[in-house]
Image 1 (cartoon, rainbow, N blue to C red):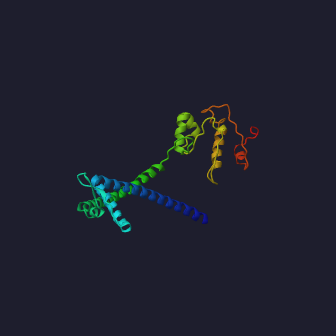
Image 2: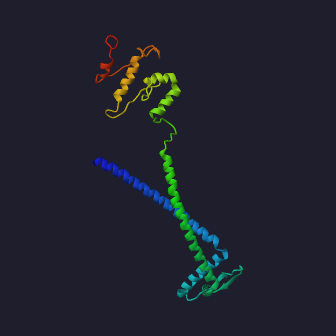
Image 3: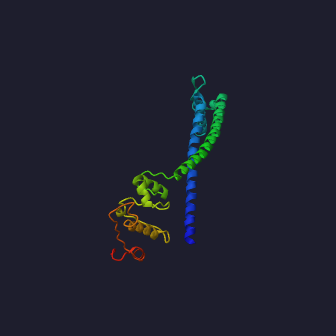
Length: 250
């Protein structure tokens, strides 16, 4: 029970942690694109001369703030709407009606960019979740790239039929729907049977031994051979009891 709790808790917490990472990644991607969109929208919708006047307003604001320390406010260049540059004081720039109007226009365009950026962030965030979902669904399908793969009984049976031929496959399968044939000469290459207690390892070995034993019996007319031999290290004695022939086997 304790191991089940630990195993289940670890699996659940891992999934929660991975889900939170995906949410954060989607949120950060959407936020980054939204900020870039907001800045680009504001920059593109505001004319260049307005930006120049806004920067002049910022310099004038800084100059007035520093004048309390230095005691004097120097004149600075200011670009008019027609492109002409004049020299004027910082206080006049701060009181200029057109400059204040352009400043409000920039703020309003920035707010519009924020609204559109939030909408873009919303679309990207949930769009990313949808993309991750479809990608995860695609990963559920088994995609074999290279190397050895684990096949089911039906898939393996069809592969053996194509490789061994229909007659050889039928002989090896003994017309049974639930048995898998061994490829010819594959017995000497090594076979590993793995399973829990009662999963059918001994039954599978008995089936193989029975086919080897019958190669010299009634089965030989359909698949004639020179005779099959098997070396069996029988610990339990089940194979000796079932297949040992007095005077023929050692």
